[in-house]
Image 1 (cartoon, rainbow, N blue to C red):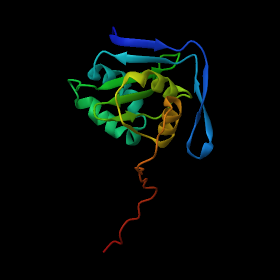
Image 2: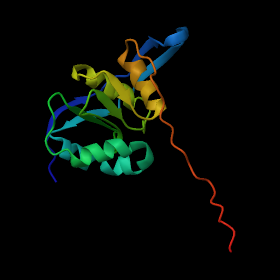
Image 3: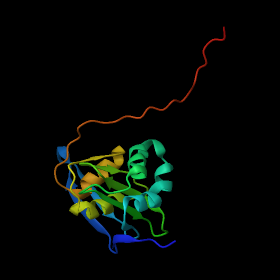
Length: 165
């Protein structure tokens, strides 16, 4: 199957940058040389490429899965991108169809930094996704970020049956 992409950015060198976080803490941002950022031609093409990766952790990616699966025509100023490892596997994804950028889980170290570097031309005012991905993306993107609220997923670890009457 042939793939059609609007743009591809390959990272051929290792990039280290230090970004200051609130409280004076510095976090390293690393983009590994075996990551490649791709922008499929459309959101349906993006969905086809990232669906299996997103479904591996469906609870974390529910919003991105839902939006990408039903968006046939990209709204103005939307943006989407995915990061692939050297073996071709998708290791991260980002999608913006509203002012918030939706981020996936970071499947390989440096994947969010790669997406952040590519997202410089995207127009967004906030990010939403798994907490570690938000921290990595914000550190790599730079600037001032502040947490607004956290979404929490609950996990049922045991089911207790009701007494039999």
